[in-house]
Length: 383
Image 1 (cartoon, one colour):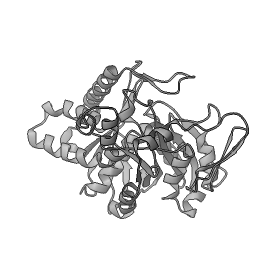
Image 2 (image 1 turned 180 degrees about the horizontal axis):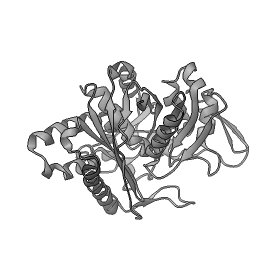
Image 3 (image 1 turned 90 degrees about the vertical axis):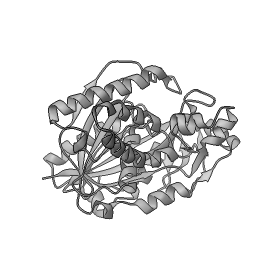
Image 4 (image 1 turned 30 degrees about the horizontal axis):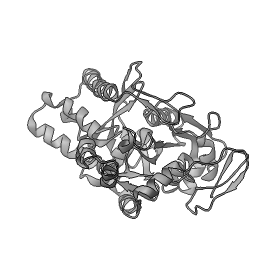
């Protein structure tokens, strides 16, 4: 029995900021963003769209009524939760009308949460092969206006339906993990934005990948030739490229060119969206599937990284006719039809805050699953 991703989709808000506009406003060279970071656009969300909105929107694109009857578990991987107690997964479960006898909960470990959710989904389906699990990786990455991290912001969600006999990708059950207690990126209670040691974060990311890559070769007896593509967690697209190139010395130039060509296909969406934290690896995976010419039986390696730090490397195999089960045209349309914000519009949207005074407030965002009211600090969503 194979287990894996039967359906996958993503969602971003209908607004973006062009990185040239941001560079000009911050009086810096646009090439620092376009080339130095590998980012061209950045998804921006209004106050009425949070991780519930993004996650529910991503999942609604792929779920049928039959899926909703078969889903036993809804897991949201996020580090952008709006509540220290109540799970966004419970709200999404309700908004999507999934059958009530299901587990719904969040998983948090920086950008690793989506992968932890995915692996838990695999384990559940292996024990209950006639059931399904909905995994959502949703985040809003914010570092503050005029901050060093501003050009690496972004937001969005990726939804994946995990089942037996999947149509898109199957797990190879070859995960390798690595943990190290470091403070490269963290956000204590009471802080609106993360605290980041940028140099350390970059170094730990690369070191984690090279260590886990060596462990993977040792345990699974594989080499780069066994993978049609390698995908990475993408806080910004240049980061994953640095990690990939860190293992280039062990392979011939032709092999380097092959893997880098696949990497370029895997970052097309992230260049237009920015940082999705827990969802960035899976947005890269989806970009690869939509924009490459991989074939059934190809093996794709995935490197997941969460600051603090936990990393995991595993692989999945493409299924027969997988292209028929993607939503590539809709994905391209979603990105192409967004509104480009001016710098004042972006800064105003960034500074908008939902009221927390316990009163009753109404909003008029017609977007699916957007917040339409807050009353007694409870968020009510379009449905």
